[in-house]
Amino acid sequence: MTVDDDGDLCTCGSRGCLELYSSASAIVGRVRRELEHGVASSLSNEFGDHLAGLSVEGIVAAAQGHDRLAERVLAEAGAHLGTALASIVNLLNPRKIILGGRVPQVADQLLLGPLLYNLRHRALPQAKEKLQVMVSTLGDEAAALGAMLPVREMLLADRCGQVDWN
Image 1 (cartoon, one colour):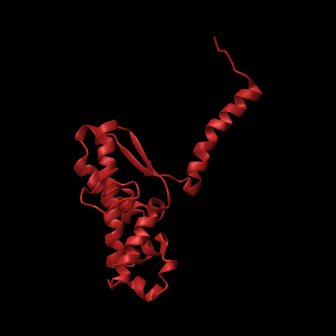
Image 2: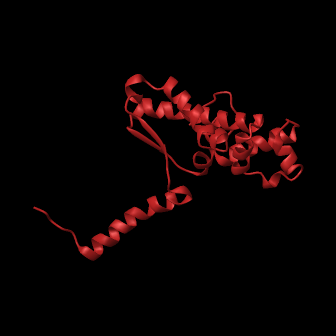
Image 3: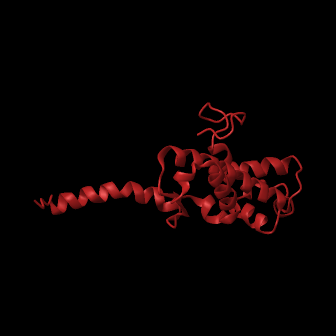
């Protein structure tokens, strides 16, 4: 999903895709590039020339310590995600959005604050009226658990047989 028409080129061939701004790898990559270009940050003291060890968790910790670079990159990621979610809300009018993955789990309000701000300001009033936004508690296993559910149901149907309630 495009969130910045003038954004960088994505691996999909489009420009300004959400993946380039809000994924864990994008956040780490953005901070790493800024550090390599000499942007001041407490992360420079911690990692120095060994930026391979940089992680979302480390960036979040720096932001919680009021590191401006870390705060800015996480806020921008949240804002882009909020923009994308507002488009989805306006189109599909869901009642609940559940954010999964490592970034929302560890970044908490550093990401959610800007996300909710953009979502509230871009979504239609009727679409956001009863909308709930929450962070999944399933962690990294969410995709595997979701993929497993149809298999579980097929196995149960095979073992228990189909029940005709009529």
